Image (cartoon, rainbow, N blue to C red; front, side, top):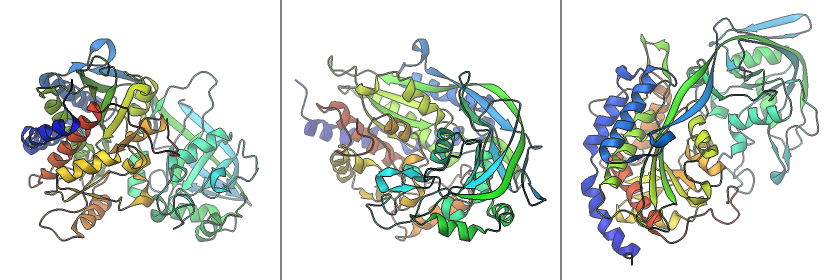
Length: 528
């Protein structure tokens, strides 16, 4: 007989409080974000050092290797494509031609995985590039865009009606990943997003730093279709492009937000020459397990995830070219390692197995977690839950915690109980329009039907004004997100990260010991 969940919970609470350490989380964060690791790029020395460090910590904690051949590594075969600075993008109409400057006015990459890609096609403006029959919305309205170059905005039609594109909250239709997927499905030659900070939710500097470097892709099969170009242009470059068509950004943005919108042929030809450095990426996920204790349930698994990669070495900013990624996501990896150590140290192991998975290439489009979901170590049908950590703020003691997406699942009541035990409020997502749920590794599991969400970040901190957390987030997002300045700071207070680790430990224990596998709420789009 196993003890009741209530008894387990009471026993686990002091354990979590006593057996996780803010200091250990701090030191893991410091090491992973140091210059020695060169920004933890994928397929380079810094990334290899990061994965060796995480695997070593797993081994020292007593975990067993769950990767290839019983090792701690699951190889993830990817192809890196890096557009070269001599890349050219141009638009032409009526005898006039406009060239756009690499990094300053445009960024992007070819999906074709070849040393040089050339393309040219008629430009068609397709609004937000969305085809959503469940909301009676179609930006394509039967127009054949095969071979065309699509021009569009990211995000989706604005609404406060929760029954229309989920109101203020961004759906997957609003993510740039969906835009390129839909363009590929429809046979377009390429797709170009006109960047505006309101529609994207972040500045051009974030786009440039994320896209002006090597991009990882799953290797194409022979004959598999691919976009010749997927990329972005600045708002100013978008104005210059649309001027050739006698249009403006404001005009087309307004048009794109009406239900009767129809695709607009721009009478402009867009083309490009994209020389690319292409290489096979030697990269990997780090995977360790603590086997479950129940003979019947040990083949089922609770997964904890955090991505180890960041942007590596890139364009210098104020003389600094190392994109250290201290908050994003050395913090999440540090929590993952401390959780693994605490879980492995439990005297009474939970009924289900726990898998601790640090994934590669999140910054390149969730490639590592996407690969795991397609090649799972444990069958997805026997995967109870994924709890993910990505960018947790080390700014003091938390008063609340954000669990965006937990409300989609049957796990929410347990999460609420854990929050009460830890004296934490559960705060709503302060920026639902940013679509955070679709931007981190838990989404790869959700997309495959596994209940999944991220733990964190905190919006309110003890001893600070109520709006301090929101202001600090805005400052981080504007000045440090995907910048070299996302560096470890000696005065950071890691109490909130310990609290996030405790929360995941307690919730994971509850899920690992309950009788039934969790599921999505009835009617949710990701329902098993």
